[in-house]
Image (cartoon, rainbow over all chains, first blue to last red; front, side):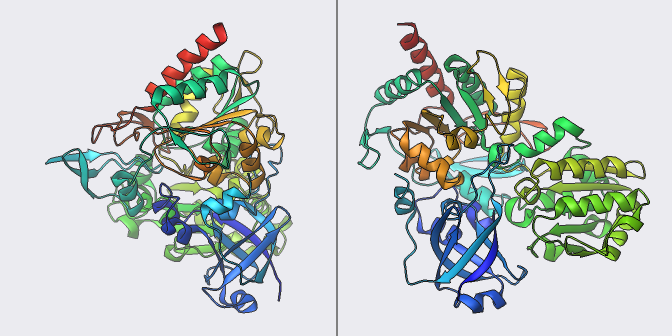
Length: 124
Length: 432
């Protein structure tokens, strides 16, 4: 089924540890995932599966993770190029794009997670 | 073997100044006291070895000399009508000074990473001021600490230990036991799990909840609905009582406020709440700044141009209007026709549409490491790492300026050297 969520993005400690090493698989592992609570995870697959997230602004494949700190319907992706494929660019008249509070939908997928290089190549 | 004590960490806005670094043969062998992010930053890893260039962004880079790369970068900038100079937060103040000079020379827009971080906080401070304090005051005096939309366990790992929660202070000998910790967030973060009280609000309802707290504080609880932003009124009334009972309260806020709907108005409202709490007891509020010297850029830019960031020199004099002159504004309007990205990574941290514009225009990158900005760059100039291989000044998140020493000798030129050469060359090209 398609799960409708409210997407937020933000820092994590592993994102920080790998931030100066963005060509590494460690960076991908630290940032190319989406956290949902176990109730929501069950609607789109199992932790570790790939999921496709779509917003009005783009789509991206990331890994599914469980975090029961999230309320129902709230999805979290660590900040970085995978999250930013989805965020709202509108700066709302103050210079700041919409990195939190983006309506999104999530589906299970067999597609693979793009490497950082492949992800950015989509913009060229 | 050399042991450097009391070194400063060049990663986050905590700028921890108690780091011990063991150096042997100009290599950092060991880093003590830093958090795992600080250790990773100071130890470093494989760098971009030499400058690189390419004409076709889909093609491969070719290694070139520094002179060739500087010449190409200078030509791109001198030939641009609407250049953007972006990044800066992972560099020292001495670099910022040179960058602002280049921006003025070019009639460019200069913006820093605050534009996707705490720039909305600066807008709020313009309107309301900032009743704040140094982290030393918080450590010595605070008996109540609030983290609102910030998650220091992940983003500022030693903040709680050194300054705000666990630290023992002059008027707080008990450390953690002498402080009440409240976390307000949309999800139960690792910081929330350590709090005495966690208030879970619905994403995007910060402004409403702050307004409700202000109404209750003003004695107008009767006008507050039963539930505000998912938080029961009783919990908010109890929270106001707790806030009023503190002797010294410190509020630290993060991207939960600056990046959610209402943006700078959330912070404007939060500052008003703090101002009003000061009618009852002592309160301070501090933004949890991300990069170690993002605060420094704001300071240098303000004393050089009158504005903290998003400064447009196109008119020949500094002009500032975030929403119009911030990096993402000009990229999304496709105005930017050349960009220099330095000590920041727009390729990773800007929305896709902004990165698409960077992919359309000539991009110069000045950075020690290969990152998503490299993927859209034409000219890449690797540099020494500020705070590890280069000494200079940085500002902690509370505005305290600190001097970074060199831990090891650089193997690459410094940002300052590169910027000086580009500025000199740009002047010559434009003067020809």
